[in-house]
Image (cartoon, rainbow, N blue to C red; front, side):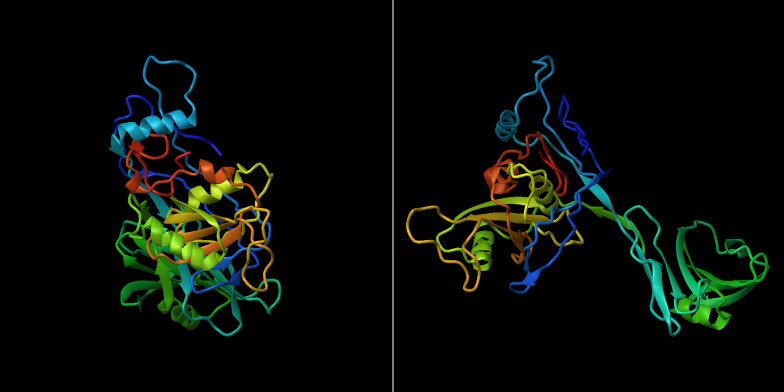
Length: 363
C-alpha cells in the first residue's frame, strides 16, 4: 500500500476535485442475519483492501530531519485545527444490462464495470455449442453525431431506439453480425450487436437496454447526523454483551477495514468477515465492545452462543443501523490506531492540518 503525502509544508494549499483512490472492503462470507440492516461475521476472512490513499502529516520547514511520531503529529494538528480542506472524488462504476433477452440467453461476461472501465455485457445461448448465438452490449463516449461509421457495416437503416434516432447496421465485413447503434445523450454511444441472431431480436434487446453511465462521486466531508451516544446504543443492542466496556470512533469502511487487516492487533490476522459495500467511503461508527475480565462468574452472552468475546459493530453514521457485527480476533491495538473523526472533538483529526474527506486514510 503506497503512501502519498499531500500535507507537506507550507500545509495551506487547497486541493479541489482530486481523484482519490480508496480501499474497498469485500470478501464477505457466512453471514447470519441478526436484525434488519445487520450482518454477523463468523469466519476468519480478512478484508481485501487495495489502492488505499494515505495522507500523512507534515514537518516544519528547517526542522529536524527525523519525522515526528504519529502521536506528536496528531497532537499538533489538534492544537492547530484544520488550515484547509481537501475535496476529492472517486470514479463510480457504470452498468449496462439487458432488460429483455431471448429464451435461453444468459450473462456470460460483464455487467457492472470496475471504476474507470467502460460498462458492457455479453449474453449467450450457452446450451448451443462452442460458438453459440450471442448479444453484446457496449458503452462508449462519442461526442459527434450518430453516423454509419459507428458500426462500420455496408448497410445502415434508420430505427428508433428508446425514443432516440438509431441505426440498424448489417452486412460485410462481418455478415453474421447485426448491430443497433444509438445515442441516449449527446456524448454517449450505445450499441447492441447480435451474432447469429435475427435483426428483429437485436432491436428488441436494444429497446430494453438499461444503462447507468460511469461518473464521479464527491467524497463526503461531513458525516451523517448519528451521534456517538446513538451509535453506542445501536451497538449494545446488536452485540448484547452484558457489562461490556465500549469505545466508539467515527471513521469510514475504508479506514476500519484497512487498519484491521493490517494486523495492528499483533495476532497476524483477524476474524472479520466484511460485507461488500457500495460506498466504502461512507462515514461509519466503529464501536468496540469488550467484555470485562474478572475472576467472578463468566459474563452472559446471547442465549445459544459461546462466551462473550470482543466484538466490532459498524454503525452507519447516516441511518444509525448496525451494518456489521463480528469478533475482532482478540487484539485491539488496531482500534487504538484508528483516527476518531468526530467533529465534537475539535481540531483536525488524522495527524494532518488538512480536513480530509471520508474514505481517505488519515493514518
